[in-house]
Image 1 (spheres, rainbow, N blue to C red):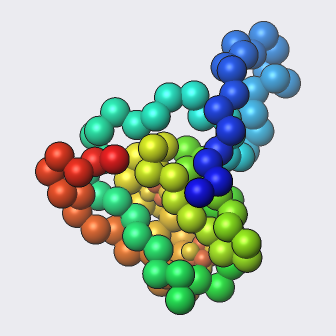
Image 2: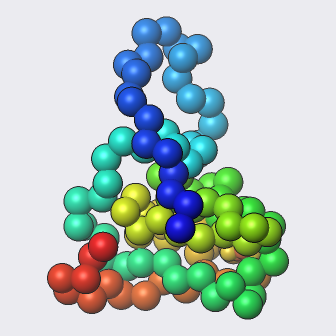
Length: 103
Ligand code: SF4
Ligand code: SF4
């Protein structure tokens, strides 16, 4: 699995150094999630059309491209569900996280 590259966090000093837009590109994340996810997104890859809407809107950069489709890095996914609501192909379903299985 290709994981986002973890980069050293650099404190922005000017407004222009802050990332622009609502989402981050995978690779800006520093910390893995803290086991507070209650729902997790599951991609049905047979329904995915590779539009990358989920990739573009995930606020945590947890989605990454795998060929012409996408995959989720659960180390960084917070379970917010934005990807599922943005997926017009209905390829992403939010499933309740099993207790103790938050990985
Ligand atoms: S939004 Fe849905 S169809 Fe588009 S890339 Fe993501 S999972 Fe695939
Ligand atoms: S549930 Fe939220 S954090 Fe997880 S992959 Fe989807 S948009 Fe990103």
